Length: 197
Image (cartoon, rainbow, N blue to C red; front, side, top):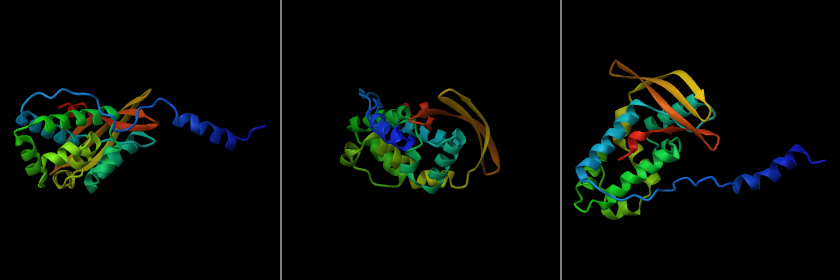
C-alpha cells in the first residue's frame, strides 16, 4: 500500500512537467505608433492601478489586499506576482513599443515620470515582468497610492474567474470599482486589460 505522503511525492514531478506556460513568456508584437501614445497608454494603465487592485492568493480578496499592499510598500516585484499572465504580456507589448521608439521621446517621458534616468540600453535589456516591476515599484506610484484607503466589498466567484468590489478613498473622495481576477496555477491573479498599450 502506498502512503498518502508517497502519493504526493510521486505526483509532484508530473505537476512540474505539465504544459503550463512559464511566467514572463512574452508574445510577439509589431511596434506602431509614436512615443506620445505610448506614454499616454502607460499613464492610463498606471491610473487604473491606483483605482483597482488584486493579486495571487488563496482567495480573491486576499489577492486584492496583497497587490494593494505591495503597491503601497513600493514592492514592484511582489505587485507583479499578483498580475495575470495576460496582463504581463500586455506590459511586454508596451515595452516593445518603447524599444521601437527611436526618437527617445517615450523613454524620456517615462524617465521624467518615474524620476529616474532610463537609457535605451536599459529598456532593451528588460522583459515585460521587469518593466512592470519597475513601474509598479516606482516612487511615483508609491506616492500616489500611499495615502489611499481601501475596503473590500462583494466577492463573486464563477469557476476560474472572480470579481472583487474595491472601494478606494483618496482625500475624502470614495470610488468603488470591480477588480477582475483569474485563477492561474491555483492562485488568483489580477486581470488588467488597460495595460494593452
